View 1: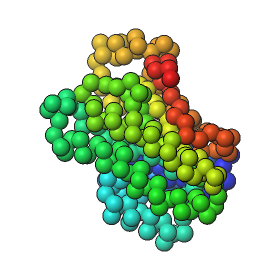
View 2: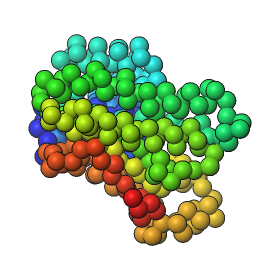
View 3: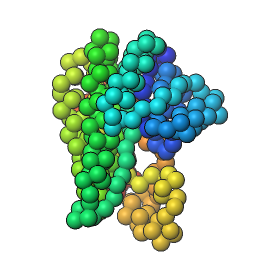
Length: 247
């Protein structure tokens, strides 16, 4: 069980994996803060927490915008909140073959998925260093190792997340701050529910366990990495993919 005084910040928390992570951390006793980019997303976070019988707050932020992230930390400071757990979950896709990919499709993915880690980790580390305790968990993807056609921008961003994780873990380990990544495989979400039966069967045929993962299974691994039980794990990428990729 986490110390209830510890705050956890989860980006992209209005649905899917981010929602499950936010709710799991709240159940584990963290004071949770979830972010979304829109008013609808903020309402969804607040509603989801309330319906689950949990408490927390929601704040609008664009992780691809430095001024927006600065405003987030300004608000947290004004509220005397210094998160000791950060889950970098927010991400976007802009799929296209490379020969057709526009500069904006490349830039949007890199700014949201990769540069956001720099924007968020740098300011949050100050409080973690003072506390001499911290947990940073970055959400990667199985495609960061496997590759995927039509997703060179997304795959590059997820591979970069893992490299960033290893480098930062070495920088801050002496302060009792761990930095890890999780790399989900095919997970049952709104997006995968939209697949045809043929597409779904083809996907499942590649997975030794014969099923998709659940968002709750991803959330439980993240919650473990955020706990004291994972104090001697850092710089790692934990693969959660039913055997689709075995590192």
